[in-house]
Amino acid sequence: MKKIKHPLVKGVVKEIVPQIYCVTVDDDYDRAMLFCRYQEYYESPYKKFRNKSFTWMEYMRHYKNTWKKRTFTYPDDWAGYNIPSNVMQRANHIFCKETEYDEIMNDIYFYCAIDSQNKNNNTRCDWYLIGASSKDKGTLNHEIAHGLYFTNKDYKKKVNELIGNIKPTHYDKLKKKLIKMGYVNNKKIIDDEIQAFMSTGLYNGLDTKELKKYEKDFEKNFKKFI
Image (cartoon, rainbow, N blue to C red; front, side):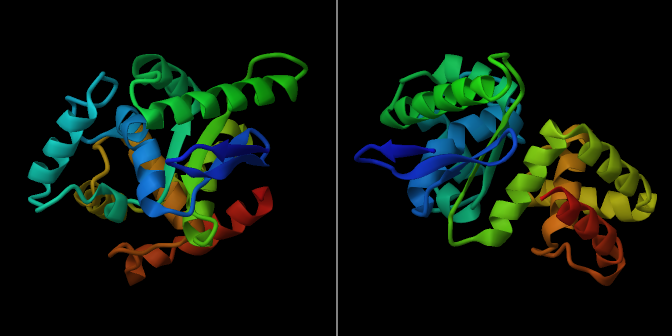
């Protein structure tokens, strides 16, 4: 476990499931500001940011204007975060130490990279970084599901089978709702979001009768892996 010791952010980093590291920060604003650029680099619905270098000011203004908000509400809109290690590596290289938040994330990245390697016979391996509050178990489990989808081949194979059992019309309905919520129109990411929501709880308009009937099999599978 690593304690985050910085005037801006208080929290801990800990491997909570094999190869899945959780940054536990209870302050919603600090957690959002720590993860925002890295999360948007990974799966932003906006092409100008996804897999691109961008500044805080560019993103904050674009987000505010796109969602027609009076202020930058990202910390209120999003509670959990999830990023694969290969994406973290690229993002860290781009944003490295540009701001104090990036300095903190740089330390987190190297801690997870070194710790995962030490636990894998000193061989580099894939790992996953998630962020959540210790007070929000639902969001934490949702992010763990994302981590399992990346790190555990057996888990991914099973949930992909379950996704394949969803009727095409219901899948399209799920997809449209997720895109409306702010997720990128990318099949890999949409499937990952579907399995995470199905495995740990449908909400925000997804919990309709026709969609909830798939939930039980996903939840049962998720419990086997945690």
